[in-house]
Image (tube, rainbow over all chains, first blue to last red; front, side, top):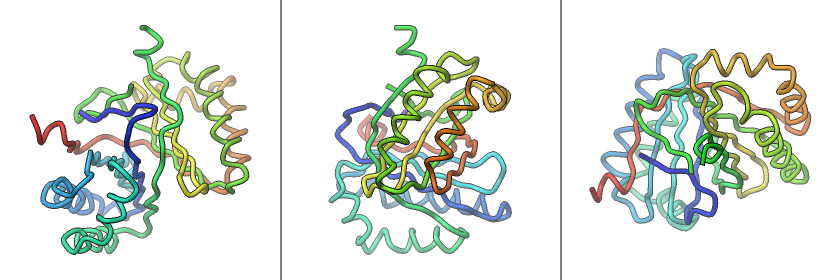
Length: 112
Length: 112
């Protein structure tokens, strides 16, 4: 289970891939494999959460890294690069950007 | 605190807004206000998590709804529509899509 919290000591990568429906499952598999074999062992990795678009045309990765520096080091890591290239080759476009959480509102807070 | 889990009984909206940096804060404010005043009271709302892109050019909403039907009902809700129009007017583009979680990998699982 991954948690999203305001003020958490992490940066968040949100990367939405646009993909042909016929390639969606393969792209999911590539991202899961990249996470399991490589990303999770890199310094600063906190989580990766792979999402399948219900209409078949998107895959999204919501990932958390300890710092911008850890994320940037991953981008240059020789083990990580082939995985990213493989994912990029399957997508029509993708948009990897780093974010900070500014507001969290959920029903547990409303009930508490 | 929001949680992301595989097999959770919800659908996830990921909506990345592309925005001019000068309008980013206003867009964040509009989304937070929409959540606090309207969205959180609608049937099926589970969470909204507003993210600010570190480079100034993105705002992302990671939101959870109980079902596709609840989300679609929100899209037609007369109270919700003006908020969505206000957000859309501030953005260069946006990409609201529904997702399911297919894989969660995080450091807590590795340690556990």
